[in-house]
Image 1 (spheres, helix red, strand yellow):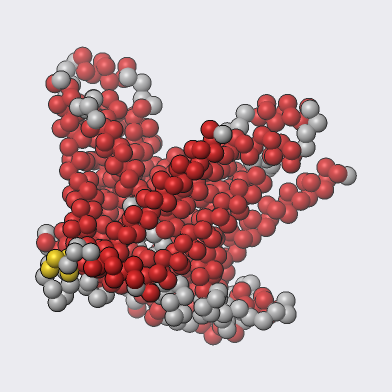
Image 2 (cartoon, chains in turn yellow, blue; image 1 turned 120 degrees about the horizontal axis):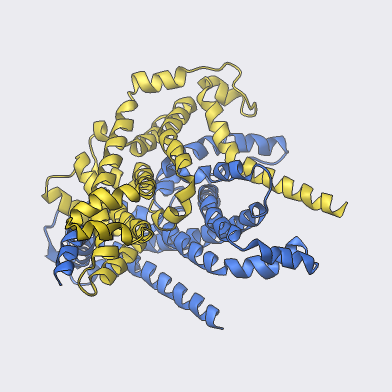
Amino acid sequence: MKIRLSVLIHLILIVMALVWSLFPIYWVIITSFRHEWEALAHALIPIPLHPTFENYIKLIIEDRFYIYLLNSLTVSLGATLISLVIGSMASYAITRVGVPRYVDSLLLLWVLIVRMLPPIVIAIPLFVILRSLGLIDTRFGLMTAYQVYTLPYVVWVLLSFFREIPREVEEAALIDGASRFRILFSIMIPIAMPGIIATAVLSIISTWNEFLYALIFINSPEKFTVTVMVATYIYEFKIEWGRLAASGLLSALPVLLLSLYIQKYMVRGLVFGRAV
Amino acid sequence: MDRHYVGLLMVLPAIVIMAVLTLYPIFYSIYLSFHDFSASHRLKYVGLSNFMSSIGNRLFQISFMNTVLFVVGATVTEVILGLCLALIFMWEFRGRGILVPLIVLPMMLPTIVVCSFWRILMHTEFGVLNAMIKLLGFKPINWLGSSNIALWSIVLVDLWQYTPFVFLILYAGAISIPRHIFEAAIIDGANRLQIIRYHVIPFLKPYIVIVALLRIIDTFRIFDKVYALTAGGPGNATEVLTFLIYKIAFRYYEFGLGSAQAIIMLCIVLIVVCFYIILTRRGRTR
């Protein structure tokens, strides 16, 4: 009887945790399928009485929400790609090729310090730099600014993935006279691919979710990323909850799908990668 | 030596980018903080006056206090709740593999999207939270519009979003404890609470130390939630440092003053982090 009770308590706690995490998401999903009047009038009914796609249709046709999804996609992919190329070279050099004394430890120390920096501290000088380069209000400028987050993260996480590859693998290629760049791109990266994809996915998620720099460095509405657009909607659609909910869900869907894909690597990436 | 040359060539792009985008900006920020650099003035040296006027400024003090309240409130509650969740989920049961990804879902959402969700839930008149509260016979709560409550509502939203982060790290730690330790303890007649008290918590201590540090660092920079939930209001009740600096620099274009406040903020973060590391180190050697 005593064991039964503890199992019951355990079960109740699990259910409570699930409800706490999922109820808000569930509620917003049903709100997105409701007419405005229904969402306001029936605050407690947990299913849409007159389900409708109206909110999504309005959002996509009238507000052309796909523009902002594409902007976010471009910026996230671009920033991640730049970081992967530069970061994989740096990580490989530090773990395997060898760099002059102190260069590696100083770089890694700096990577950790950058992790602690509040992003607003670099935002003002970064704004001045980007403006002088003519990169304010460009997607490429935002990609450049995101290197502040993604590059240290990629370098740090790839270190551990490269370390796991046995040295023997590259030794044969070295004896054959292959260059270090060749070895990196045709041996190391293919072997570390699962880890690199996980790293890339977390980098895409964190840049997709970023808000402060996207708000500061982009001014033209047609270049807004999804987070800036949803923030605009929050104040614009005060009680048009259906459309607000639909825009939030559409913005979150890509990252939710990606996050399910990388469950296995989540912990290793997250300790460092919670940049936003 | 030749090898090091190739190695240096390969880290160089990373070093250059990091130097241009992070190292140089910090020094440039320090430089700007001693100048009046705004729409009306082009770089006039003003000594320490930006710092003095910041520290003496009432709004800056309020923002500082609110930031500290938020950091402490969010970090403490998230670590406690995250630990509880990890202790609930560390025991094997059927379906755990599916439930853990569901529990951590809130953490993967963009913060702004999380805010849009909670603005819907927390609406004073039509929100579902107040509808439930009314159903239970209590008075509705003005979640985001009352100056006594708004900051704690933001803590609540942060709690919802980032408790899963604490949970995930502590859970990974907890399931890495060798099972034979538990089996031995059960043979010795220990129950689950005793196992938690004498085996799990001591094992998780270093994980808790790190995860709390990460939460402190990340809650200090709070911006998105304030921007999207309350915009610093009502009054100055939820004004925080990053939001204040953002407004000074990018709405009023007072780059010098903004830089000075950003540098003060950076110093606060560094002091807190150093203090925290010293404190937890000392606890370990004792």
